[in-house]
Amino acid sequence: MGTILLVDDDRFLLEGLLITLRNQPYRVLTADSAAEGLERLSQESVDVVVAAEVMPGMCGSEFLAIVARRYPDTVRITLTGQATVEAAARAINEGRIFRFLQKPCSPRDFIEVVTTAFDSRTPATTGPDPLGQGLSDDEQDALSARELGVLELLLAGHRISGIATRLHISPRSVAHPAGEVVNRCQ
Image (cartoon, rainbow, N blue to C red; front, side, top):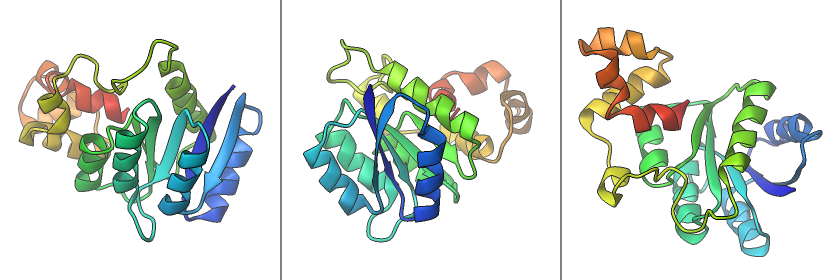
């Protein structure tokens, strides 16, 4: 049984996520601010953190960047109702998130992403973030202009084929080298 920490200032959303996870084999902790989330992490071993992007005091991507530095083996997920390219890029580049979910998120999709996050953790996983997947540090730290363009269209709900058509490139070009961005956001 693993432990998941849910961080959001919306108590109703936290309660909904608790209900969604009630039949799952995880111990669920909650925090209603990034500061409280960091406090919980300092006191408890946490396998997965799900954090809202928009919170008073500290945004989710800043919070997850701290989590990435202090607890690199903790899988990080962003949940946001106000997706922007800047927020997504910050979450990916600084927080090295595992997935980027948009509110509203169906309970089934949420459980699937959380389960995948737990499954991505193996006993041999120590050190590198699961997003590393063979990328150099420089490749992990920055998104190209094309990748940001692909990400913007992805967040707008376009499929790879539609993005390729809109950007006048092949679907293969959309998927590679921007594939890491697409994979992180699906």
